[in-house]
Image (tube, rainbow, N blue to C red; front, side, top):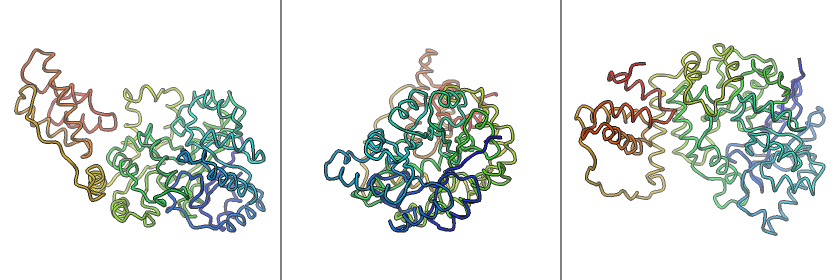
Length: 469
């Protein structure tokens, strides 16, 4: 069996160094709360550490024959890198990273990679997962810029065909991120990393403060639809061999916002290739309540604090064989036609039936406050109600329609009502009918409901005897 190696996040606990040295850890990575470049976590969630402590930490890591990687992976520097005065500070900061003994840097932007390669050639460059390397062409592009390692876009973690092709196409080491629980093809992901990058930049006008609109939406979806929990591209400890078989033997374990106990539990599980508990205990992105007490937004704390009562569990003991399917499945184009993850979710995902909906309701309430501008003390401007236009509706059909719309998350109901009612009327017109009937709304709901909410919608149709599957 190939000797695997891990790159592991640090929370700057000095005790972590000795413990990680007991496992096949090749390097440890981290960053200060703020930096001139920024990174992929909000500053308030990270532990305070001085420049002197960072230098000492790296020295201790080297004593244990491990290496250190410094994070410079924000996806945007607000164009300040092209300002002469700021650019000078940037160069001084990277020189400091060299001076304190960093072996590697983890970078997102092509500009910064090129600059480091040109002026700081001793630093080994790893491309961050935030760069979204998801194809052979993109991997070759970053290698040509000077990267020695690439952490691919986590969204291709189960795309074995693409991973194999990337591995063959480049000389770079591929370092696969194991512990990411983000939604599959998450619509918030690019925006979220931009927010996080700016929230950790030392020069940003807001000083790290922001409202995590992305996490609120992400959590509302996960805690209302177990299928999305399974679709997320985390990797089980038991499944590392499938990646070793295609030549990937370096893996990343994230968690710098987590306590030492959490980090060591994850490292132990992946090192032993086995975990008999709840995958939530070793995967990020599902439990937002850890460290939330540090958030400067009191309302966010109060909302996310309800999460533990929802009791989300991914029973890892029930997932043996789960990964095999993905060696032949084309998820990117066939996800809407497939029930595979939904079926596994029924086996392995558990949510408290009473508390999970209450948690989701709390999240949706906060989202509503943000989108109506109430969170900012501003009265939203609502358009005047217009007279109802369009075809007549069968009263029974209209009642069923209103009930089914309620199955959508609160923040999407207004849009769903507008889109699906319009589609229903179009369906009636195609029948040369002046009245919308049950058959018209059935077709509209099936065609117009986004995949994450399809299961609930279909159950609703079945409830009214409108769908036989």
